[in-house]
Length: 304
Image (tube, rainbow, N blue to C red; front, top):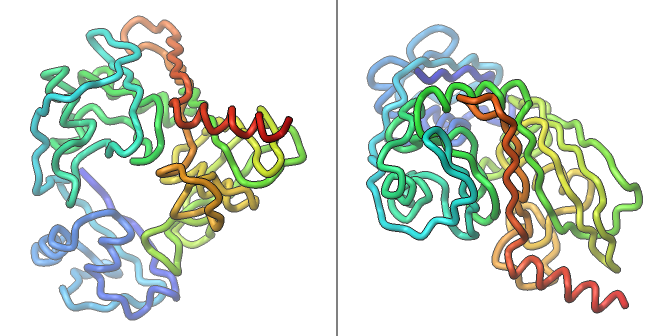
């Protein structure tokens, strides 16, 4: 079952409820309209009409089966497998690959390739996200763990919730960070001015914490290693922008475009988790993609 429980902000007043929920919850407009017709979306404990316009402080709730209109189909795809056994598989995801199908991306996703490679995956997350216990963005590269069965899925999800999965990322950011390490503790939610973006906000947000340490400084950039304590959408990208050091190449959150990168220079390079069946601690690593490594070498040459 999927649940919706949100309080509308003053900035959202006047927005049609189907549009508002679609943007808040990443559901298609047609799916939201269907839920409205079935009377499953409540505003202040009463079923909402399809043409209802949101008011400030409206309490919007729903509980429904998370059935999707689409179905992920197996597709032959070259996968960079870094670890695999009967319960889990860890993939080194390349740039420009979406993790799971959605409207506009029904084929060519990592899930399509995983279904072909594994034949069977955990069914807990439904037909579009089989085995997926966490995600990384389309243009972010690096390690992603996938559950092959429900036992593994339940265990990995619990580890993520209890913050015992260690996820380390390398990020090249704008500017020179003076302190060697730090923690960004700032809640993240939908940007009230642009619903396609996330932002540090107190409105309908969730706690978010990113720990970072400086790995290398250049003339106008800093290479940092980030450790996620929570896993909010676009968390590292939003948090680094928040402290004034956006990720290089991030077209959504970076205000500077100084080099051609084809997306943000953000790479999930290490993943440590407890094996769901054996209890053994497993650490998987993935080296930097060639483009990322080449840019760092160019910066080193320029700094000499």
